[in-house]
Length: 190
Ligand code: 5GP
Image 1 (cartoon, rainbow, N blue to C red):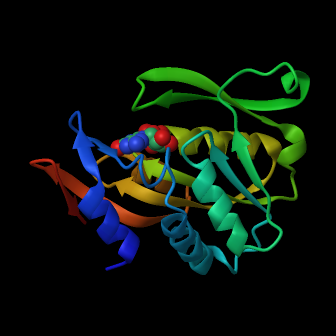
Image 2 (cartoon, rainbow, N blue to C red):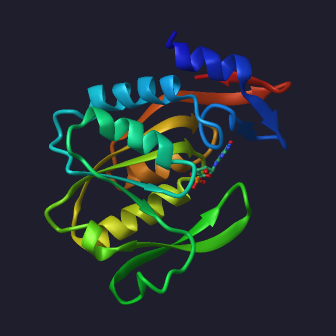
């Protein structure tokens, strides 16, 4: 078993009742060796796909996307913003996303200068649950006329519908670990 999977199994905590908290490793405090190892594994899977841009959504996916990009030389990271910005205004691509953890719908935006029709895009995110964040990003990539190569996810909750929604659209989803269930606050892997 990969060291990062073991670490998440040992140290992740299950809360309310199907949210996994790993904010000391992934998305608040960041364990950079763990992120680097994950980034290396995304690179190994997607390295021959001619990726020109890595796209994520703020804020949980940013650290992971950056470590992933370090392994693809010269590939920038673009993150979709959740807050409206007057600087973006007229040249923004946008989409609507419903957040599973916050139970709130928000608009994500990317300046269209950073997503071009010539881009081959890899989406990276920390979690896949109902797939709404990734579908919002897919929509923006479509609007930009860019090509989506695939989606790389650190932790997929395999008992939720995110993967099937993405696969229905023909998206290649590569998850580093897939959780089958939470039982008695323990993580059961697929
Ligand atoms: P989805 O859009 O696939 O429903 O949910 C994915 C997004 O919700 C991720 O970007 C992540 O921020 C958040 N998320 C979903 N499930 C979890 C979870 O179990 N733990 C944490 N920390 N975030 C989650």
